[in-house]
Length: 67
Image 1 (cartoon, rainbow, N blue to C red):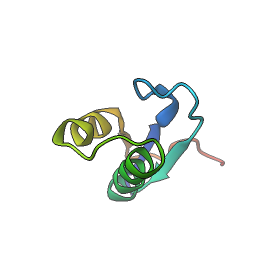
Image 2: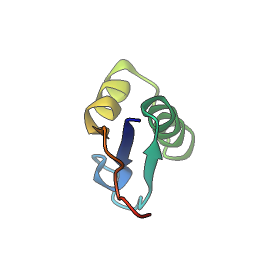
Image 3: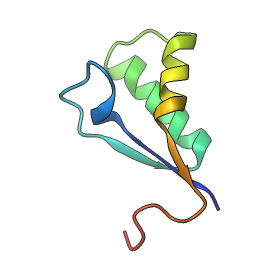
Image 4: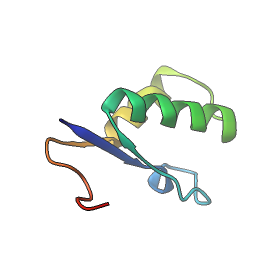
């Protein structure tokens, strides 16, 4: 199974976020989008969606094995 990860502390302009999200790509994307729009106040735009997709790392192997 492919596993995806995003580290929102690396999102431009979000210095105070320490959140990392992992799971299936769609779960990670949807959760990051929801957090950034509902909690951080970003507008849901095509540019935001593109930035999130660029930041998601996907691996066929489990990320952070053993956790």
